[in-house]
Image (cartoon, rainbow, N blue to C red; front, side, top):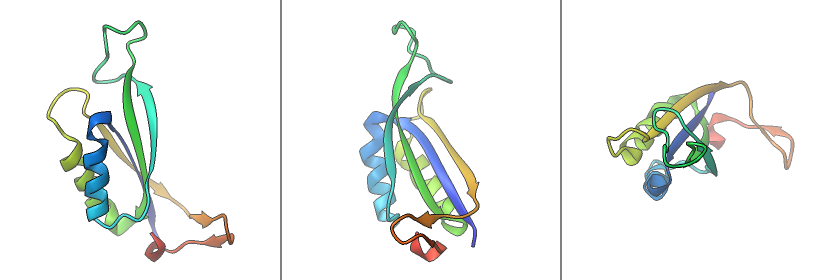
Length: 108
C-alpha cells in the first residue's frame, strides 16, 4: 500500500477555507501548526523578515494525494506572492501507536 504525506504552508487567513475544502474531500484528519519563515515573500518591515503562516500536514493514500493537493491549491490561493507551497512526500509505512498496528490506505 502506498502512502503520501501532503504538507502545505499557507496564509493563516486561508486556514479555515483549506480545512473546509479538506473536510468536503473526506480527509479524516489533519495536523495544523503555526510556523514562521520567509521564502518567495519576506516581511521587510519585521526585523527578522519572518512571516507567520500555517503548516497543514495530511497523511493519505497515494490515490487521494492529487485530490488533496488540488483542494488545498484551490482554497489557499489569493494569487499573490506569499501564498505558500504544497509538497507531497512518499511515506513507507504508518503505525497507529494505540495498538501498534500498521495502517492500511483505507484507514486514511
